[in-house]
Length: 495
Image 1 (cartoon, rainbow, N blue to C red):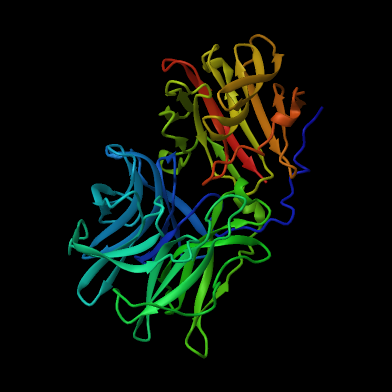
Image 2: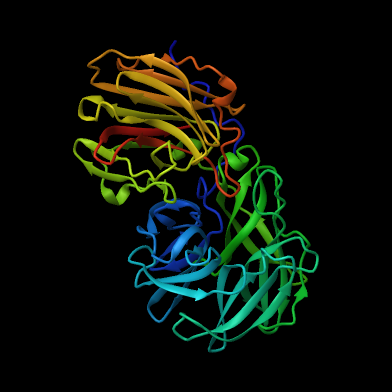
């Protein structure tokens, strides 16, 4: 049976400005361009950076961290740009190895898009310190953050004076806003307007199918308060295309207008495409209250298609990511393609997975593998990965073509096909569908796709693959010993 792309239309799904998982974005203007950095959670390299000339069209340029700082266990969240005195700062949240509690660290660079060096922990407070935002009042810097998110007491947005070099707190923390309604508050950012500090923050549940995230605002004459409610109860929340919108920061454009870069779930893609980067303009009503004008992206959906010819790809343009808690893959690019050796950790049967963020829940992912220059007994292929206990895939091991599912601690083969001995190359394909089911295909002869019949077809689905805070991702994988390699020639992700 021949598999076609004809059923992969984007249906009604809208395009984000920054497609795929890009939660909690922060934005800054520098050197005539805009730069945005977002949450990476458990994916490495950490904290992706994008660049734009107009706030509408964005391209990835790198990551804050290529390697994990020594003090960090997991959970890279909510990075925040700040600039002063020739130095760019990225404050971010991560869990500390010593006690497993989320703290706020900072990295610095002379550039907004590269060269960041970690400076360690800035805020280690209570059972959780996340969502840093630095604001200046007069000549004083203040750090603000979310606290008590894991306690039985209400969440509170706190502030503290920050040292002039931006690397440590000074003085005692003070309260900015108490979550007396116990609905959840976080993701604060500030704008100075008409003699007031306006603090925009997100309320409600951020993530998952039951999210109700939305943006609210308060204002005060000083950073330390007191604050009063201002504007509508929901300044941004949901519209026809998007829902659970929030957690962003502001930037002034070249004309002097303020824009808010934030995240939201697509109404159709939801958790299967994650919280994507969106854009709104901040305006002021006749009563001088804040109002957001949502800006749609009317770009052609095909612009999100990804095709990588690893034989021609430079290292600087390689943005694949992996679950750094469960593997550290060894890989390298050359004129022959992408060589990958597994660096999987104990208890991880899936192996090392290099992934890319999907822009839609309906897609086709393909990879071309050079079997003649790959280790024969190494398991290599493509998969859709949610976590070490949530994945599906199709792989070659020896002469066996295997479809499989990882569910909990059980790794189960769903089909097994023998391919011709001595095959030099194979191309594999997975197609996700609107109903969340997935079909698998392979090709030994160029242009001829053969369908793979899968037992327990209900298990071969992306339905249960999404972790609580990020989307499942398609990618390539290898599983075996570190001295075995697979050679991938091409990878594509099409919608």
